[in-house]
Length: 270
View 1: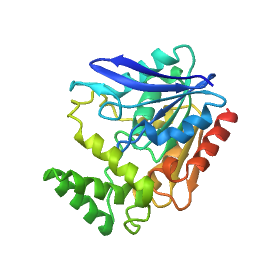
View 2: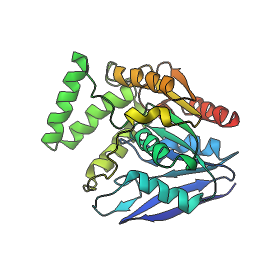
View 3: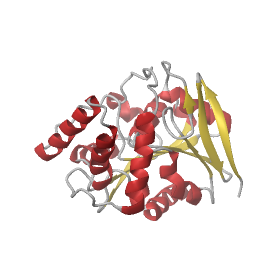
View 4: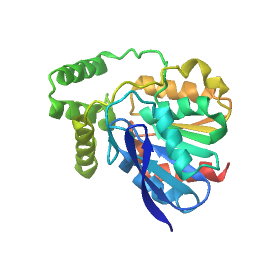
């Protein structure tokens, strides 16, 4: 099986990307609390039948970027042009990565084969209203960020994103929790990246996305993310959905084999 790493130039950034396998391209976009390592199991599984591509966005992992006004959509296009210029790609994206995938699907529809969106953000979506238990944690997070108490920020984010905001702190322990804290701390240490040029909201235009789409979420995630994911699957013209029981915001890390199987089954049906 072929495997290679690449540095892809986009503006003043060198985007770190890995490629494994051959065939139709599948590009993995990570969440804002991790880097491309969150997809390790899925890249390995998908590479048996496809060209699996995972890259670190600006501010994450091995990507090096000087602060500048930039476009995450243009960065994704640069990756696709460099590594899979002649074929439409399936995008597999989690959280903030899902926002970029949806923005890309609207701006470059001919470059998209399909979408697999895990607990995705959506640009232009209404601001959530939190139940009191979650609102308190969100308030504590904002206070820790304002005080630049990055250890506290990482601890609260672990509670919100890997335990689940309504679950007991420490539901997830051991290597996964340690890896989350390490990766999130690295992202917090990186310099400011500059403003995003991607300001056109996707939320009112989602019905324009005709690509086959699968939306996945965990039932321990934020309530508004679960609701938004259900709504998105129903709104996309060729959307389907799958709710995972007993997982929070990062299913690819909590249940790697199950998520890999779900992705490969969807790809096989295209």
